Amino acid sequence: MQKFEARKAQLQQRVSLIETLRRGQGGPVHVLDEISKAIPERLWLTQLDQKGEEFTLSGMTTSLTGLSDFVGNLESSKWFKKPIDIIDSQQANDPKAGDMFRFSVKAVFNNPEVAPPPPPPATGLRGRMGNPPAKPGP
Image 1 (cartoon, rainbow, N blue to C red):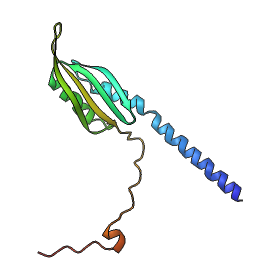
Image 2 (image 1 turned 120 degrees about the vertical axis):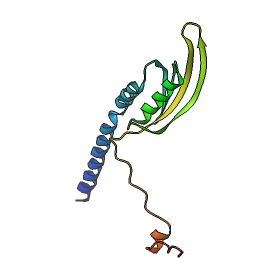
Image 3 (image 1 turned 60 degrees about the vertical axis):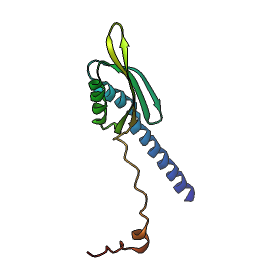
Image 4 (image 1 turned 90 degrees about the horizontal axis):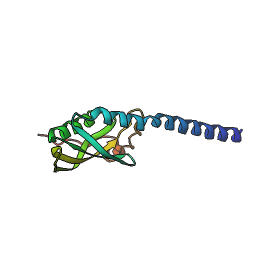
């Protein structure tokens, strides 16, 4: 009977892992979709790098307003954690295109389809004593 219970637990753990991986599969597709939706007119991405959950997006735009709109659009997406950080922005003069701005932004992936981990158990006075500390009177 013990062998059966151990095997059953092992199979349940595998099924749980497979389900977690399936839920996370759509993440890259959603990330690219959200990035493409966030790009305003006259802004071009030239590079996208990923390290774990962190994305660095680099590109060019004709105005700082375009960069601001891009960052705002990314922040309004549920697929990225706030805030979106502007790492760098520099004015660059292109003889053919005129004034342009090069930029880099950092965005951290947030998969809303995966449940967040449970909060850690409470510690402190309430956890040890059972009652919160009394508030001082006026």
